[in-house]
Amino acid sequence: MAIKRILVPVDFSDDSLTALAYAREFGKPFGAELCVLYVVEPIYYAAPGDMYATSPNIAVLVEEQGRIGAEQLRRINAELKKKGVRVRTLQKTGSAAQSIVDTAKSLKADLIIMCTHGRTGFAHMLMGSVAEKVVRTAGCPVLTVRREAVKKAARQKAAKKARRRV
Image (cartoon, rainbow, N blue to C red; front, side, top):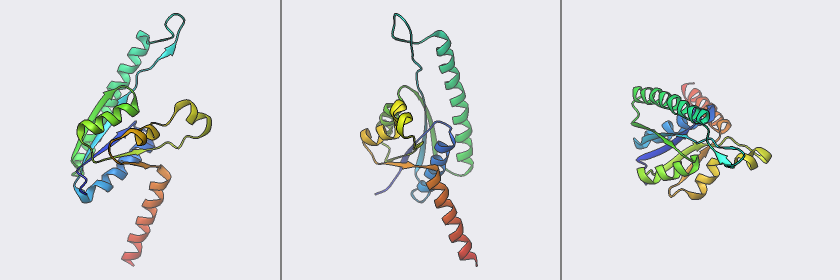
């Protein structure tokens, strides 16, 4: 099975950038294109009258989040292209999980590689897990990456390289 296109959702956290680095290495042997996706999620708040509404001030925040996201995506695009990676960056607005699944389908992604923040207990209950929702609903395989697992693999790879040099 050839992997031609990998979707990598990012939120610019250390964990998501670790998943991006992992995806870059994972895709190298296949010459895969990395499609880096950033999703701006609308912000809702409870208010009397309309139970859920957006405020003009919140709209400004969402707009700013989109502007900053676009800047970050341009930087990532330039860095990856310098390293010879085929890359495409995308920005969407909506529910993160649904946007990831929809984008994977529209791009005909062969694989989604994404981070999991590893929330448990109450935080998981409140916030849910974007990765979990994507795993359950995506039409292609999903590889979830935890920062500690990637760091451990990198240390093992470096140690193996060092042993070969000796």
